[in-house]
Length: 245
Length: 370
Image (cartoon, rainbow over all chains, first blue to last red; front, side):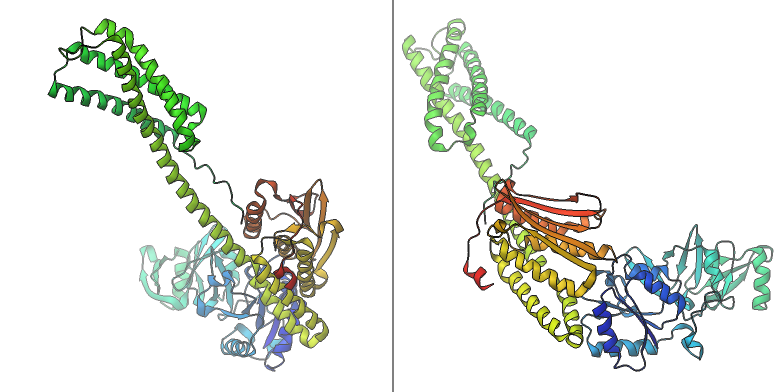
């Protein structure tokens, strides 16, 4: 597993690097002192785990994550029980308190190893992250709305709705909006799983519960989760062929 | 701790005036009606006597209103009972005489004889009797009036005292909380642990400085004042520790006049300002921050200032806790004679300034230990 350490204090980075020596499975491939450096690094190389300090000069850890299209597995490192970290669901979050306890570090790494993390399996691990192809269903996006945050695996999003410059993501019982257009989002989604239902909505085919014929050859699809989506007439034809109805 | 003049609680003057009018009308009206009815029961009065009585009491009402205006003008409500009694007695006697004199023409025009059939009264007797009556009536009026205000004042003082107490408690609690910044402690411990391997000698110094800092925060926080020299030593320890953490991103300098060193300052005040400068300076700019700590004496005032490169955070609210706390401690110690200002004095520099009376520091046992 490839590790990136993001912390504004040199000695803090050094300390973490020293502790990680005990884990041969985790290889530190880079360090960054601020959000800009981290972003530049991630554009060039792919990291499986990012150790991320929340408080940094300039952009903080959250702002860095928001600016990334997809995020690696993140382990937050903080000196003190950070109010900001309470924005997460408790079990969705890995965080370590500084000075880091080696036992907790081992547990966090183990958890990271056991989690599916995008395209890291196989031999193409050394390659930079693909910038153009569709996202792997296991890749995650970081979403923040108000004072709540989520790491959302692409696979778990059942519906994307356009709201002007924003796109509202429906997953589990949440529906936060991200500042990205639906068109831009759709470009990066795998056409095997995601289907453009009409001008304003993209659905996840894995979540279809019911398909009903509607007027003049169109369809209405009900998703697990309850949303009813009406397919446009043109998309209904494509849909019929896709689903061999 | 120094007592602070309790703040004047905003009074609902409209309500007070309404209460006064009602009390006056009810008092005089009630007195007139009750007295007349009691007299009717025992020995019926003439109709003309009743009219006279009503007219007299109406004049009484006017006189009492004038009396109240004088009370307010002379500020008698603030006097103690001892100072009040001779003043009130004299004034009330004068009012009683005035009342009798004002009533005199009424006796003449309205009265068709003594109020009760068969009563024989000389003019002198009427004069004395009437003055005597007026005197006691106005003494009772005064008692009620000043009694009501004394009661009100006592109640308000109590509320003020509660408010003061809770403000002081809150400030103490906040002071306690902000003395030791957990972020600073744990980040410093993290740095020390890294240094143990990289540079054991620096790790050693850092632990020593950290210990001095924590001891000072725990002990000196309870003192009212310490010498600037003592406070400055801790500021140097603090900045040295932070310098190890932030390395070249933190660049402190000092401009301190020697004659300022012996003066008294509230403990952890300068430290709070420096901590603020580090927090917003280093936190705001990845390239780091210059910090200038200075102290000087001018015209009997001790001037402390902490300047850091950067901009004043736009909201201003975020700087809150530490500075509010510092302001409060200054106010408790020096009242209006101390000021704390935060602003962008010259472009690109945020400056926190404190001015307080220059007083020599008292050397205490705790300070010597710390």
